[in-house]
Image (cartoon, rainbow, N blue to C red):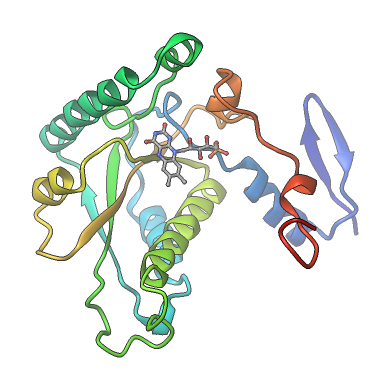
Amino acid sequence: MTSTERKGAATVSTGLAPELDAFYQVLQRRRDVRGEFTGEPVPDDVLDRVLGAAHSAPSVGLSQPWDFVLVRSEQTRETFREHVRSERDVFADSLTGERSQTFAKIKVEGVLESSLGVVVTYDPSRGSPAVLGRHAIADAGLYSVCLAIQNLWLAATAEGLGVGWVSFYREEFLASLVGLPDGVRPVAWLCLGPVSELADTPDLERHGWRRRRPLSEAVHHERYDG
Ligand SMILES: Cc1cc2nc3c(=O)[nH]c(=O)nc-3n(C[C@H](O)[C@H](O)[C@H](O)COP(=O)(O)O)c2cc1C
């Protein structure tokens, strides 16, 4: 059995079995969302499934070094949004000319517009000292947290929700804001919530900041220069 995918107004046959087609469509549909949050709440059962997807990610040495701090308080989100704005200014001050003008048009967060903030954290002490697979690559713990985030992002997309990853912050500020214990690092503030739509094109591409490069440029054979 074959299936179809949306391409502009038309539909084209992908030639894939429906469940495989549905999986790839979720990958394609996923977007980083800033401006399209409706502000509606995330239903509890959906949130459980999305967090369950994050928690089923692979992790180095089965350390599961992530935690999820759910931030609903408007006051906390306002405080964080102010901090993000000041960090946006720091970055803007480093730009000149066309980069500066282009960046001025780009929205970098939907902290108040989304109904929920999810702070994803990394605890390097989880499962240590003998974390199987991390003895030579300390970053493997951080990679594991990023995989949990990606699982969350894809599950949210499949559920019809939007996710926006915000990284315009200083770690110490966010750690203090949500009361992280010493040594536990914030890895992401994720804006999560229902959306009016998911754009076809990444915001940064739409605003002329950067274009996606073709897969053929990213694939190398045998050696990086191959
Ligand atoms: C580690 C990481 C940090 C990011 N930080 C921000 C951010 O602070 N603000 C923002 O608007 N987007 C942020 N993004 C989203 C990227 O800009 C976005 O993923 C990229 O432009 C591609 O667009 P797409 O996710 O819609 O495909 C971040 C993404 C990642 C993976």
